[in-house]
Length: 484
Image (cartoon, rainbow, N blue to C red; front, side, top):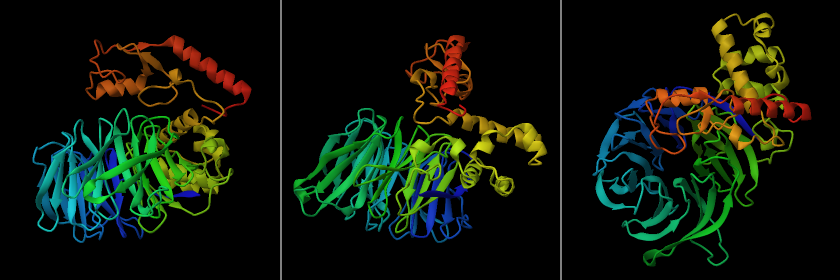
């Protein structure tokens, strides 16, 4: 079972990355800050937030000892911080000045890798805090990096879809086309495995990409003569691009986060889905397991970080909302599930009130403005409106497995069932609010084709709206849904 135990809401913009040490959790964001929390009670440390970057912070990671923390940014810099007092130890400028997308410490803390949007990779010596070696991927931006447990090699992933294996002298050991539409993340398990041919020196690696897939590989380092990436299997649990993946400390679990707003936890040995967590309301951009304990952090473009406690038991069909992808209908939620949902939506102060009134999933979906005012005594019009808006969003997302929504009814931007579809100049239909937000953020290109829009006029698609309404009526008559 996976239990949501805390939601962190301190960032004011998209959360891009989260990372654990043995005692702390670090998160970074488009808001240019890094925040550091104690694992004892998830309170923010006195020196947090860390402010030093002038643009969005894309990645953060702890050194293996936890004594230092690295962060990298669009500003072209990787900053190393002292985790005892939050002091800035050094600013490492990417030689090309390109935005830095990823940074990783080697297992012995000797090196720090920084990878940039122009495909450049720099290996920094952490003893001298100076430049050591550099290289470049063939094409695309460098967006992912993972070190082997022994530090003999590391793997990078690029936006053109390649995985490249390097040694500590920056020699390219092998290169593999992994994801057609681009790699987004990769991670190497700390536990050696057998690939049937090699008794030692073989590890499992996971990569994920814009093709909606997670691929698991055997990775073998054979010294100066090179290395090998050998494909093992593909996991296809997500319905949209997968943005993050990570192994648990014991290598038994693999977690992933996606544009479909879901977090999926797999059993590594079998590839079976153990949990599907669907509390985030926007793209899940990052996920990380804590060292030496079954604690999971997930971050999202909804500006929140969820902290989950996992146990060693495999989920059963009747577990909480996050336990199984077939239990996504909110009608089946328990009071505890409703409490977790309230925390995830920023209504933690209402948990006691809802528990006192025995509000389970079915009751939640039936709440109205009158019941909020008269029964729960919530008098604030603004708060009532926010609660009802979130409940309506929940109704729209409450689609059981048996009722698969036709793809043409989903907004290409939000991947949610459209309520007010409009046609843009590119000929595609979008949810009106989502497209207005897209244009309002000064984007002038098509979300689907990336080509310039000839006009910003949005025309109501009444035919599609009627088709969606008829489909919803059919589902309700068939008993396939409680509410959409």
